[in-house]
Each structure stands twice: as C-alpha cells, then as structure tokens.
Length: 358
Image (cartoon, rainbow, N blue to C red):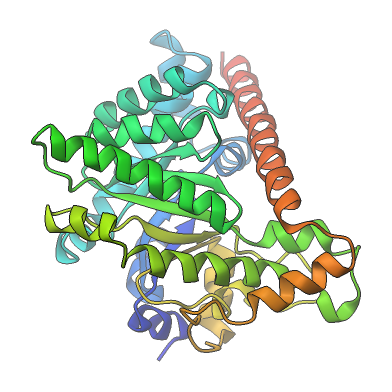
C-alpha cells in the first residue's frame, strides 16, 4: 500500500497544492487522483504566476482573451476559472461520493483586498457565482478585515477557504466568523450547509526561526503549532454552540494544514506530511511533496487530540526569546505581503505575454 493511500485510509484528505494547464491536459492531475489518493486541490497567486510565466500552454487563450478586450485581473480570472473548472469537474465524483465533504478546489480573491472588507465580499460573491461549481472554495484571508467578509460570504452561501492562518487563535477566529455566518442563515430560515476549511500555514514557522535556534529546536515549532490548532479544533466540535448548528444541518469547518513543503534542506522532504496525520482534516501539499510521500513517506501516527507536547515546545522557544504569539502576527502580515508581491508578478507576467503575443 502506498503511504498516500495509508494516509487517506486514516481519514485525512490529500489535496494538491498546485494547478497548471499542463497538469490538466497531460492527465497528471488525474494520475494524482487515481494513484496518490488526491481528493482536492488548492491554488494561490504564486502557483498561477509560475504556471503562466513558465509555460506556453496559456498563450493561445491569452491571445484570444486579449483580442476580446480582457486585460490584467479580468484576463487572469478568466484563465484561473477555466483551470479550476476543469479541476472541479475531475474532483466532482469524489465530491458526490463523500456527501459533498471532499473533492473541493480553491480560488483566491485578489490579495490586494486583504484589508478591504467590502471589496472582498463583493469579489467573493462574484467569483463564486461566475464559476458556478458546487465544489469550489473562494479563499479569503483570515485577517482582521477578512473575518467579517468570511461571515458575510458564508451567510450568502459562498463556500470559503480561510487562508493566511498561522495559529490556533487565528483558526478560532475563523471558526467564529464561519459560525456567525451559519447562525445568520439559520435565523433567516436558510440551509446552513455551506462549506469551509481553515488553512493554517505550517512550514513558514520553522523557516522563520531556523537560524535563530539550536539544532535540538529546529523544525519543531510548525508541528507544535499544528498540534495546538488540532487540539482546539477538536474541542470546538464539542461546544454547545457548534452542536446546535449541527442539529440544523451544518457541517464542520475542516482544519487544513497548508504550507507543507519542507524548507529546511537538512530535514526530511516529507516532514510535514507524516508528522501531521489526523483524521477528518486536510493536508494540502505541493505535487512534488505528494510524489515524495507516495514514494518513501512514513506515517508517524496521528496527532493527539490533547495537543501532545505543544506547550513544552512553545516554552522552549519562549525561553530563547522567540514570542510565539508575536511571530504568528508577523507571519500573517508577511504572508499577506508576499501574496501581494506574487499577485503583482502574476499580472506583470500576463502583461508581458500579452505584449509578446500582440
């Protein structure tokens, strides 16, 4: 049995953190579904920038859209919706056979809107309606300004992947926004079965402190953060507030482990796959990481619902002068800034291609 199949059998969803037109056209994504137990897919501006700038597969469509009057963000979203619609169709059988729990794909709103609540709401609704796919998530950042947008999107029936979360506190705020949206739907007599995942970024923690700690603390902080988030996620499912919503037909906001490629060249390339196994959660991984885990990955057992040794790990980092809460806030800001930079690079790539094709 492949390690990816074993992870799937444990109850964790394996999602591919990549999308290119070549992956769709060559049958590679179908291979990941059939051979590596992939059951979903995520995307972000960096992924699309690499896909478009490093391939000529998009050139004919860019040329056609340019002639039709598209440019900039409008042209990009046409390309992205084409790719993600194709991926959504591939995952649709999984979506139905899992009672709509799995088989999802994700599209991000413009990172330029990370601190603009009203614009994020409008864009999330527009993209969700434009795609018209039941298994599409719209990615909205879990920033202070993003949280009310998440609530409003959920109330409006938009499936939401909450991104740029870096701590259990961030995840709990995202869960609160999700439940507020569902509670408003219940009060309005609407079906509360609107889906969401909370994406907590893992490897960026260890990258941020890699050169600031001794070897015995390297590559331990990210998994400790994940362990704490998983503990609090499990506890949240037993609250009276959630159980009331569940009695009306709501489904849990699933915890998703994101940023799971290893950044430390001295560590295993599957560190954050085998170390983050947990039932009823999602691990979204770059295709190269998925291939590596399928080839030589090992499960290290499942995360403990009690948080394992996360408190001891946090104390060890605090002892050497690293504020875990302070770093969480900084990582969220840095993540938003890096997505803006990737977005600008993406639009520049599209402009460059458009001019060349013109």
